[in-house]
Image (cartoon, rainbow, N blue to C red):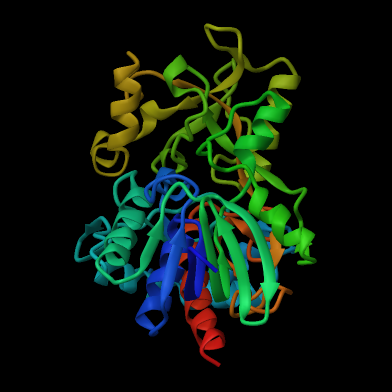
Length: 397
């Protein structure tokens, strides 16, 4: 066939999970191609600010991390996947460091914060641009190899053939022994339908999930979309911005119109978001200058030294809009953020379609119906690596 390209492994998506899969597959000896919907840099992962979880604290363990995931998921997560996620977390961090990612350190170790739903300090950060740093490290590792990148090549068609799978990505027709779906979630498109704000990149529209479902792939919890409890509500340039949850890890608290704390500011995401909605519904919220509902996030309680190290990007963004979060409270309201559910996968990230793998936000089970912060980037790396290795092994079998 004219114009037909052939690879061992085709990765759909260029966020953290796709790049982790691609790098791992190539290093395992596969001929690999990455098809990106837009540019290679365009993804949700790069927008992730808060951090990545891994049990490094002396009072912590992968088992405790797993227990926190189970509780935050309201006992709906697939504990087989959770056990893999938390046990491989420290190794994933070291792998990222080998790729050049430099996590914030202090006192001879990692600077760890306690995030919502966690019982221990285990959130590692690169300031408040963690996702940017991780995707940059992965992208540079990918570009340093011999793999092929198809940019501005969205998936149009995927069908099984005698040698594996045939995909049409933009103008390219690709045959591959195995395929890794790492195309993210659908919250940008869902927010447009609902008339709401979203933290998501405009590419997060969910059509790759629909392709897999049409082929017969099983999915779970697709109705369980997550709201980030602390969306920016004002000024206008911050609307839809995900205020890092590390603001609350370093002392910020949620307040109603009377200046009262009304919830555990370090509770699970769904609980905190629901508490904000309930407070506004009860008439104890505040209103932004442009008439939007909100409550206050009292960021003035964050020590300046912590903010300078862990929240520099947030400070720059707000100060550019004329607000200094260290001297005045900021407006916040939940904003559509993450697809908790997705395609059913096994321990090697293989879907119920043989030879088709899924990792990152497009996959379901690891978070159950409610994700803890700091576990999305971790899932991308842990299961991206597993998908890449397993896809290579199957393609060469």
